Picture 1 (tube, rainbow, N blue to C red):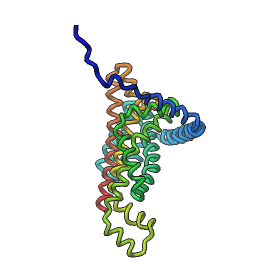
Picture 2 (picture 1 turned 180 degrees about the vertical axis):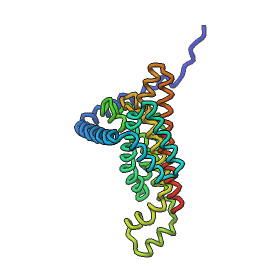
Picture 3 (picture 1 turned 135 degrees about the vertical axis):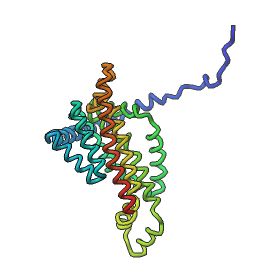
Picture 4 (picture 1 turned 30 degrees about the vertical axis):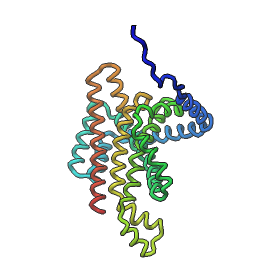
Length: 288
């Protein structure tokens, strides 16, 4: 009869990390409960109105408009792919789901930019903020995507709002990180030249640093869009709707055809958004 080998680690008391997190979440829920409800109502109304606006257009007209936007910001080849890809999505009967997904991505990315750009700029103005923000970003980018769904559901319940909040938190780090990185990479000579001409800090930021850092910032926005798209699909598990819900339905029903079609629609949307923002990044680099 073999004897059990004593493990010194077994004698250590268990740290109540989970209990501590639960206590903090409960405290936050009671403290900011009113704010989360108001935010939930606002985001739900805003997204519903924007989605209804897009669906108000006849699909063919909206497809032409999106294709022209792709031509304006990218190239005619991307415009042709956009037109054909969106026609295919409509033909597969996934148009409404695709519009819902695009709406969630646009709103989530907009919120990420509104929050991320100022934080990235502040991180270049203060070493203290930089030392605080960067480890937080490392933590956020290494956290599995599914983990973001738990607090989002706890604060905002199941539905599109919790999915949007989780998407914003998951996709925001590249905007903050690459905004700060782009500004820090601006040559000191350019900043010193602006200072020599009597520019204020605001003028140096808006006229010198941000324009020169724009290629890096656009790369961060491009990554933000891709992360938002991936999270929107995952967030279908908490009621996000859109193409992610169709993928999830295909998995639950073992409907390979539905899963393939909805997955193909996700890929088409991803390629369109990636090519448009990627081209904008390249044009910003050429201008810089």
